Length: 285
Image 1 (cartoon, rainbow, N blue to C red):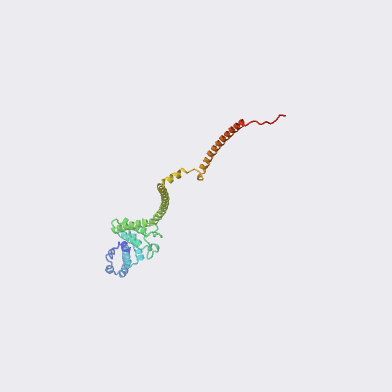
Image 2: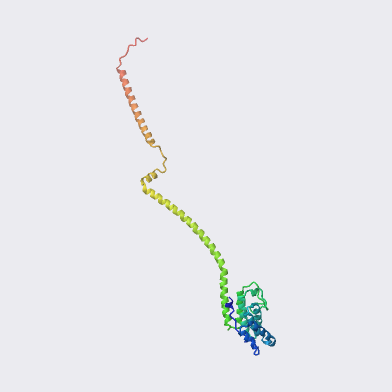
């Protein structure tokens, strides 16, 4: 990440130093002997007081190349104070500060090695707040650089890069909430699917039963018809109704026969009486 953000390094060496700046400091810097170049720039502070903002920037460059980010931040911050007199130099310093905040977020929690930068238009109070997003702070640093120098293409590139990273960060923070919502939606959908499957199974069981009943009817239609005809009737013992019906007919015939016999008997009895002789019962007393 450091390699991406520390894009504002310009090997200034003695570029901003006074014309009489010792050639040794620049030679040491160009030779990447930063530990030796640093004290030479600091020694020039007393001799060239009017060039201190430029010397502070060069010293910050030396500390940065020695991986002393906190000390570099302090010297870059001093260079931002010259914004009105030298906006190009101040813009370069703000760009370096933004690169430090983006790549070394711990500097916002425990700044050391110099005073925090005066954030000018971006923040009041002069010190970076704690518990902040380093990328948001870096974005403001790059804005300050562009306000001072619209032609600072390095600061513009870094600004767009950090802006894109902030958007990605916000999307990642929103993703867990969306995942939780999707999880709840999925659970509801699963429950609905389960209920639908149960209903489909019940419907299928009913269809299978109806199909089985139809098959049974096709196999034995007469039995089915007879069963339908007997529905609603009370079962009776075999032959009971028939026997009861024939007994009544026989009784009627038998009664008629008795009546005929009785008539014949009475007729014969009357005929016998008429033919029989009278007996002498003797005198009537």
